[in-house]
Image 1 (cartoon, helix red, strand yellow):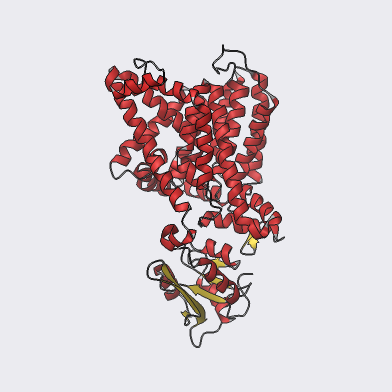
Image 2 (image 1 turned 135 degrees about the vertical axis):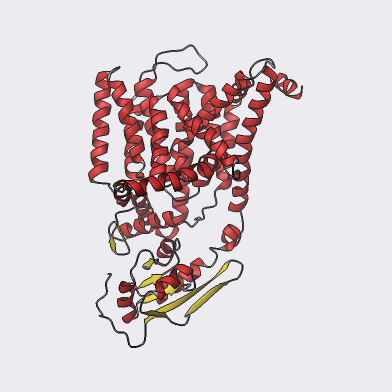
Length: 523
């Protein structure tokens, strides 16, 4: 058998369980593995921004802070994005305004790389060095983790906080031993374990509204801790109370308000959960989070069931892990299921997947158990690695925006300069949904979409020649214009082609004979 001969070449026992052999190989070659991981991430770095609405919002608010405009967006106090990332980008705009995007991308890469040793430490504390190597590698080759390490969103910084908190909590609350190849010996929490727990929780609380999943899981785990180590439980509990108070009164955003408002409409919430979010969780969010791609209708549901079962199995190992996964799922069911929303629990899912493979191997007869382990290991790894390879190739297109998303963003810098020169600072530009935040950042002008501004507001702006529209042929803009006393003027600028898309900039004017007050409805 080829596999047996290969194992023998590495000095391993071909008769032992394949999972044990993998652990031994990983432990033996851990240094080359870690070097390869770092190189994998350095190869993927190009310093270019991958445009995306959430990232554009964080960047715009951060730039406003740096320019002395306060925590604002479109000239108004902002109550949507959590402050962690905007304040970080504000520091970047202060220090390196001319190279802010390059520096921001470099910082995101460093935060992604920092997640890996924290993942290693978490599983080293829990189960030893050999497992820690494979869990770190599993996180590193996840397409989801790799992708968001190169996007300027809050997902990876939030994961960094979660891992730091879990490391500190594991060391302080659970780790009474360590297994690093030597005899088991007592483990006493160090000062840096407390620093990781407190610092990680602080990052979590300021970064994303899903911090409530972390706080909820930690609260229940701390209640259990009170019965085992009362003093420690009280200390950790007080820390969590402070975090809850800060989150409830200082950081509460429109996200929480929207969820609470929906929860008060019981019938609407039930329809949202069972008609939209639950199907979306299985097709394809859960499967895509683990395997890195949409596996296709039907297969997504099957593998999503496996992925969810793997996550719920975490209750067998740590209460806080299982609760964190469960609360993450519940939040997605109440709000919106997306593969990236699994990122805060991805290292735990990787661990659960490994345990599932080991269980399969031991349940089947020796030969078939090995084949099943190897097949499932290959499927889980190959799909993710293939997507990472594709992204690396994409990252190294020259020039980057020529081929990235089929050239959709190639014209944005020039178009944005034209918007900046054409639309006055106190004017407004109407754009198709999902592009408004990106144009707001690129052009440093007030850009909105039909769902966020009323026709009456634009009527006032149109009367004083401060209203413009991008691509008025967009269906949502057509509907919006049709329902207002406005008309679209001739294009003042066009760019693009049929392949990457055309963009045209038009003034918005009142209908002939229509007059409005010159008092603008918005600043």
